[in-house]
Amino acid sequence: MFEILATIFWLIIKASWLMLPAYIANPTAVVFGGGTPIDLGKKWKDGRRIFGDGKTFRGLLGGTGCGVVIGLIQLLVTFLQFLGTFSLVVIITLSFGALLGDMIKSFFKRRLGYERGAKFPLVDQLDFVAGAWILTYLFDPAWFRNNFLSDPWMMVTVILFTPLLHRLTNIIGYYARLKKEPW
Ligand code: CTP
Ligand code: MG
Image (spheres, helix red, strand yellow):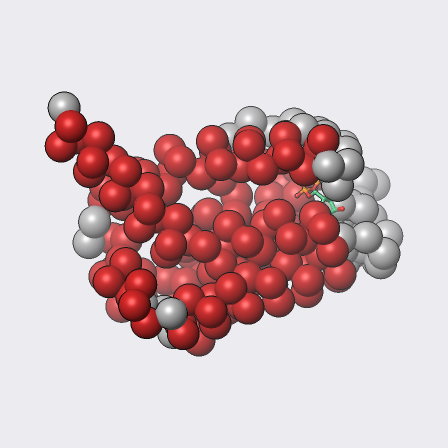
């Protein structure tokens, strides 16, 4: 029993380390967000917004920037690299990919008729994981293979742990008045 708990604890620590740039990019986009929307207010053929007012240049750049800064710090703290090492490419693909995934999610949300900020369970929580993973896989397949594909338990941990973390972060963001909805 203790061994199982220790293994789960270790998986969560390592998953958090590997996903940290993405985990930072997503909530800091909320902090930096506002101003000009990425779709410039334009509508799609269906008469609804392309992405909506929830996807802004400031959020995208601020979030990516914060994720990259954290990734650079992770690159420098060599004593923690037994948890997994990064490259400049991976730092960028994890951060930017997270917000790209979130943005593509918004595109499909709008096509399905969901208003900005409407709840879309699980998709809202895992969009950025999918974006971070896919972009990282495209630009550094070896890193993705070594850290995730070769260790399915690591992927399972991320998929189970992220919605919990996301929910907690958003509740904090809501009470800190950074976010309009607690999800
Ligand atoms: N945000 C931003 N730019 C981004 C991502 C997020 O400005 N690229 C900011 C917006 O202020 C947004 C908030 O962070 O309202 C919360 O992000 P999210 O939950 O992803 O957006 P929603 O407003 O819920 O919109 P959607 O329905 O499109 O997901
Ligand atoms: Mg939302």
